[in-house]
Amino acid sequence: MLLITEASVFPLLTLVVCIFLMSCSSDLSERVLEYAATYNAHDNEKLMSLYADDITFEIVGVWVKYGKRAVRELAEWDKATNMHMTVSNIRVSGDTVTFKLLETNDWWKLAGMGEVQYDPCVMVFRDGLISEMRAAMTQASVDAYARVWPSIINWAKKHRSEALRELLPDGHFIYGGEQARKWLALLHQWRSTHSRSVAIDEEINS
Image (tube, rainbow, N blue to C red; front, side, top):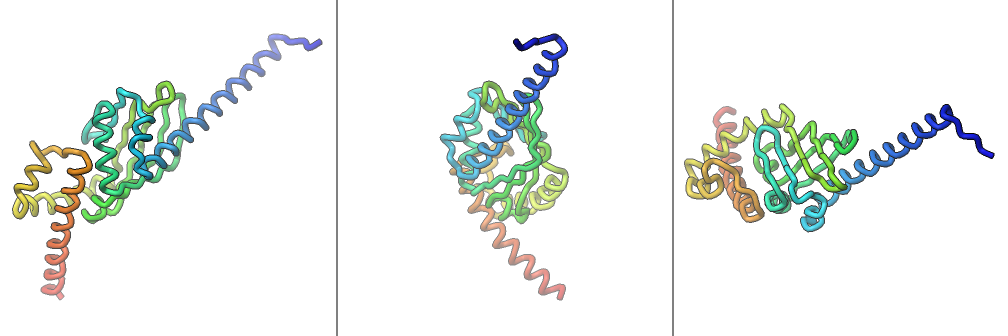
């Protein structure tokens, strides 16, 4: 006959709780990796199935999007710009996961940045679905963006003002696949002009 005492029950319960928490931690880590893989495959239908209906998606200090319709527009933008993400340093605490994210896409490349880093990224789960996503751009990425954006926007105001008004109504980005393709076309034109200007300056100064 197995004798179970109070003294033996507590370690057993502790072990069970630890195993449960480890299992949950592993499960949420795998969900983050699944999210990244789905995003990189640009399988937007599957991606939408990973979000709660009332998903909140925030780029800290930049904008906040609410609901699946808004995040679908982001996903369509990312698909059109060939976005690829790499996640690392995944940490799980309860229903919340934090990680680092490295993002590349054709928009960043044409702008001359190449990549953008977010640290931390925070993903909150509810009933197995992503209910909140927050990403903070690193200061180095913020500074890199601040260096290139004035050149792009000033050139567009001077040479492509009508296109710029369409792309930035009231000064705000409009996301979606079609808008992304128009931005890429504009950036190709800016980069061509910018590259020629740099080459002329280098020739003059040589």
